[in-house]
Image (cartoon, rainbow, N blue to C red):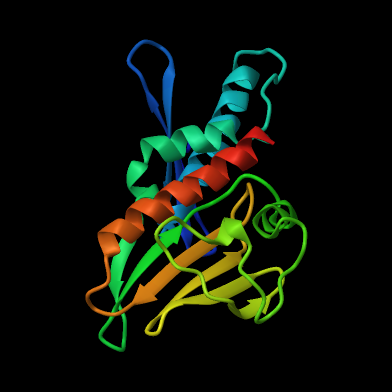
Amino acid sequence: MPRLFAFTWGEDHLSREITPDGEGGSLPRLVHTFGDRFGAASFASGWQVCVTALAQVLDGGPVDVERDTAGTLHEAYLARFGELTRGRVEETDGGGRRVRFERRLVRPAEVVRARLTGGAEPLTGSPVPPWFTADTVPAGPVTDVRAPELLAYAWHPEGEVRWVLGPGTGHGPRPVLTQSGPRDFDTEGALAVWRARVEELAAGLLDR
């Protein structure tokens, strides 16, 4: 009887293996190997729901498991994978530095965009909606906007803040937030204020 089934799914690799547990039963093992590290919480919560449902079927009972539509399971895994929420510092081509955050959210893209804009889409040259800003980061007027995926503004003669709302996996969109600046700009301070801002946004969406 075959005990291993493996296949590729796009660029991912999945394997399911069943081994005897030594007590007359079996031990199933699922391994999902992927390169999209920021999808980890989404994948983990999705597989937990699937594995729970499978266990209920094997026990001979009805399937009584809810999908993680509220996003609470996703956020619990994200808390366990804490490094995914901390942001990172990168070098820019021009010799400066950039702070970067990437995070999956648990509400549809249109809900996230409405939250960020306050329901009124900004125009180039208009003030930046407060949700796109953070404490200690000066906000000049909007320099680039393409609804629903992009908003950018200058915070320094050599620096820019960009929000890009890209497609996500399973739950909601994937915002990528960057703040670029000169070599000596306070990246540690930027990491702290933007992490607080992104987590505030995520918590508010979860409550809704």
